[in-house]
Length: 172
Figure 1: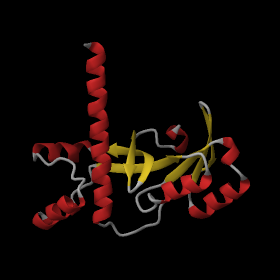
Figure 2 (figure 1 turned 45 degrees about the horizontal axis):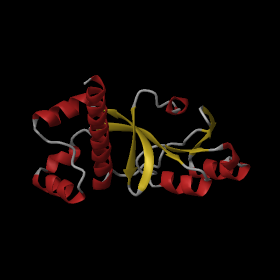
Figure 3 (figure 1 turned 30 degrees about the vertical axis):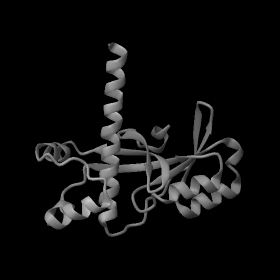
């Protein structure tokens, strides 16, 4: 489904981010992750620990991000809930909502156009793009941007671990 939005090169991970359940699509930076692994520096998802790392190692925030964010999708039954969930992601990348056909009214598409929110109509296993997401506003990167990137990297790692454990359990 995210292929419809042009986000086919990324890894999709469902996660709680900033109080919203989202499907986030990102491309891991293999070189930066390899450097971090060699330095024994795992994802830093605790805001306080991230701040300590930044204070103790001022260059940390200048390092490349472990992931390149492609976008996020909020799956909900209604526009308001979907929009509110997707809007928590505004500063970090393109965002879209996935809604059932009954929720895809003309007023929704108008508001989506104004807010730059993409809209997917999902009917069972069929999806269609009604509006493509706009680019997020250009903002100066903050500690919060890095925390979000670290959190996404951690979610990708945790998802991979679950898949490995599941495959071993099936094989064993």
